[in-house]
Image (cartoon, rainbow, N blue to C red; front, side, top):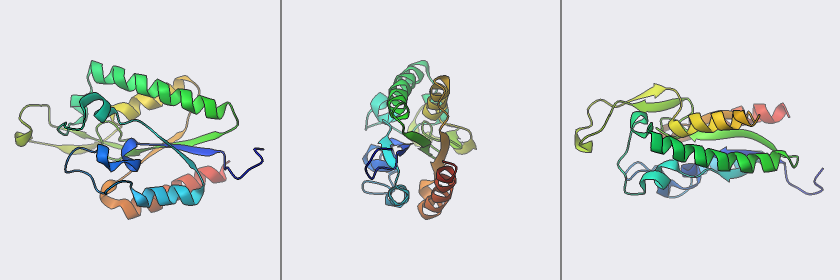
Length: 185
């Protein structure tokens, strides 16, 4: 179809998969990229589209960590809608030119980029006195909005997330997940 080596397959990835420097201070698990995840994606021959980091864009690099409830504000949601529209524009350009957007890959437990799991508990105040903080089922604010916006344009990429506390296992799960999607091509 394209007359060269490209696969025509793409995935959108959470920003910190390719740039751990954007993660809240003291929470990064790698110096730069999440190599285990990137190696799987490279091995499958899919192109990567890096999503912007909504937390860094909204609150900067000197931010404290937040839970989903803290990011679930009018201002942050508006910012996420803006970022989601930009991502959809990119996805539509590829889709309209014969490519296939397979999936969106988030970060499990993230208040903004979690797909299957996010955070709950800390509602504000002194971050040294966080009180109860827990991971709960559900999507982070940005991934929830991204899915909504993608679907409003008729795009339905599969969505999953990786667990940075279990990178090796997560990479194996991701390979199986994407492999199944590629086989359905």
